Every structure is written in structure tokens, then in C-alpha cells.
Image 1 (cartoon, rainbow, N blue to C red):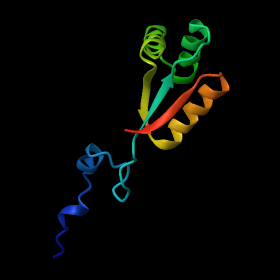
Image 2 (cartoon, rainbow, N blue to C red; image 1 turned 30 degrees about the horizontal axis):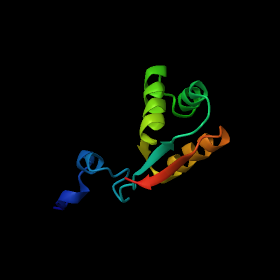
Image 3 (cartoon, rainbow, N blue to C red; image 1 turned 180 degrees about the horizontal axis):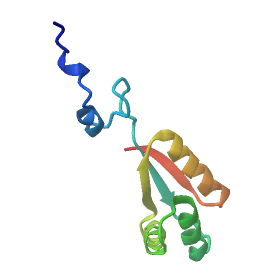
Image 4 (tube, rainbow, N blue to C red; image 1 turned 120 degrees about the vertical axis):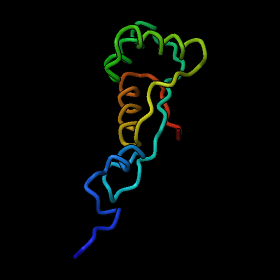
Length: 102
């Protein structure tokens, strides 16, 4: 009679809870997307944040005011490819943004 080792279980919830996407892959590194202060019209900044991130108006305005008063605002934390995409989309709208490791 063959007995399965513990790592052959069908239950992968333990791996998914630790951030693994598949049982054989490593967790994705996380990166912060920061929006920086700009001299653009603040309404256009809020609108760009809404378009790029799909935030509601209240959340986009909060990020806009945070960037305006503090110099930068944490917009989102995600994997590298999406972070690069969001920074490129902000750049297309004339907004300065950067990526930092989380």
C-alpha cells in the first residue's frame, strides 16, 4: 500500500495563504507605486488617478491631496509588471510617478 507524503495533499490553501500562486512557484515581489507632486491642475490629477487605478472620486482626491501636500502619495502596491504599467500610464498623462520595493 502506498501512502502519500504530506506535501502531495490536494489542499493548497496553506501555500495560497503564504502568497504562492502555484504550488511550485515563488511568491511575487511587491512594489509600491508613488505619485509625486506636480504643477498640473489638481482636478486633472484626480481624474488621471481615477482613470489609471479605477479608484472612486473620494479615494482619487485623497491621493491627489496627499501628493500635493506631502510631496508623494502611495497609490498602490502590486507586482513589478503592473507597477511599471501604472507608472507608464501616469507618464502618458504627464504625471510623475515612481516604483519602489515594498
